[in-house]
Length: 295
Image (cartoon, rainbow, N blue to C red; front, side, top):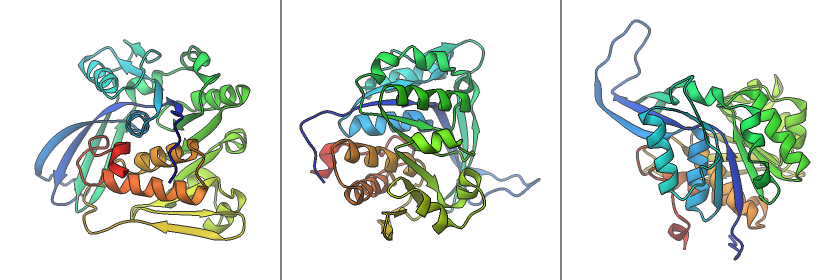
């Protein structure tokens, strides 16, 4: 994996939240009450995770999002600043609280309920205010925990400025033809492909987007079509304990590798390596590695 002397400049347009995690022996069934073994809180949100992930891997990162005017919002902003992320274009709103996610973790499986709150107050005009960054950036990253009109606008603004776009299609929603066409790469979960792309066979969907669609599953495997054959890369071991944030970590590693001009194969492998490291710590951001961890 080649790391050049150039520092990638990445814009992340997306969500931020406080993740409230309940660790239980099993997931509650309908009408069942279970006792938690412990409760924990972490910084999260797919956008913030990718901002921190790419910053730790050496990028200059600008985050565009929206937080509430509340203690959670201030904590989120302070954490991003501490991680070296530029938050100059993060909007603050009195209309909603900061985003939260409620995670039930049991037996290595997470059930997650996201409360978008202030993340759904992000508007196209907030993104437009940061257009000067689009003129010089290498890549913009988007996820789907923000309004779809913001996603569409961001893609159009990137196209206007000849800027590459990476999309993590999670939580899964149908993507428009315009977004699919103009995305430089798309990462999606294997069990959500039908939501994003419609009812087609997985292999047929992959063949439509060679070296562009990367399909992930919980075993830290990535599948893609390189134009002539299906490629599959898996990287896991027995110490995969905490799966929260693996997708965002993969996107971070893939993005950094591509920005440094690496091949798709090497970039996918690096994304998987980054994803694996995040499993060693609780929380979506705590285990995100630094570039020095790979030297």
